[in-house]
Length: 214
Image (cartoon, rainbow, N blue to C red):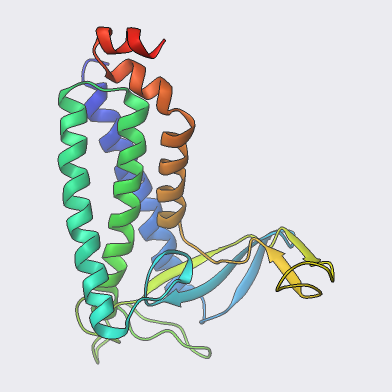
């Protein structure tokens, strides 16, 4: 395809953003807070949580921290968009461009939650479902929405041996954090860049630079 360096990243980005937002809206309007259902045995579950801060439930600095974090995400997205445009113009390795597009889409997905969800939805709680565009208004102001998480993979449970430092004798679970499609998209994008950085660099660099890499 003649314009694959433009079409593929945009198409993949739109699809991933739609999946992320659809999954969040579905869970928020069909699950009570902390409600859980098994998807594949006991190792893959949908478990509805909301977090006020960063990826995988990490929190950051109260109301002002929330605004600062969201503004940082927006600036970060602007920088990535500028970088991706440069990659497209240079016809860099398509996989590299798509990887950065995934990182961008993941960041945008969580920005949408933070900026808009507080205004668009009623509050989620343990005994009733949230509603879209509630008559009494949303549960928070602009930029103060919570990020919706639902993907939970408690694949393995065990106990640290007694001699293990700090956590000896305590139980543990892998993978404990509950996350969302946006978080997964960011993580996969970074992993692809790390795994294939040499291949990406060779195709993106001028020939004389490639020769020095070999």
